Length: 167
Figure (cartoon, rainbow, N blue to C red):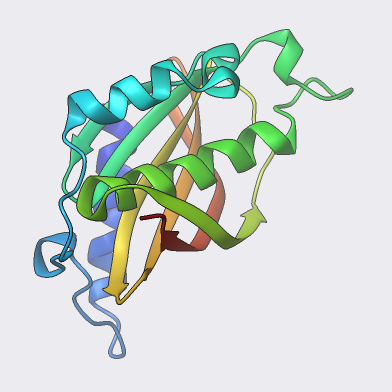
């Protein structure tokens, strides 16, 4: 898990070095509603049938940032043996939604754009989500999905999502 965070930090540093980059750190973004604490978010996960079936687990939590994992098992693969796109989409969508929830409370996904970059193969898949912006009822988040095999970590997808506050 540490290698996933290191990879994200390296990517963020490289992006910040670009001339057009701006600081979109969640620490600079304050939602005007009360976000869910970790235990409340974990309770939501524990009563979400699809997340339970996938075996989703919250790995890291911070205001505007989450990481979650899904163990890759045969039932979650497609005919070539790689992770099915729906599982990767779940990780991207949930990483964004749960990051937003940590800041502003309950949200619903309005839309997301998912770029599949490489086949998902490994022992576990990890989605890492961060809030980019909170504006009115909308929250914009980004997520990266990684496959992990032993000590090897590979970026397999990236996403951008718009979420709407539910209440």
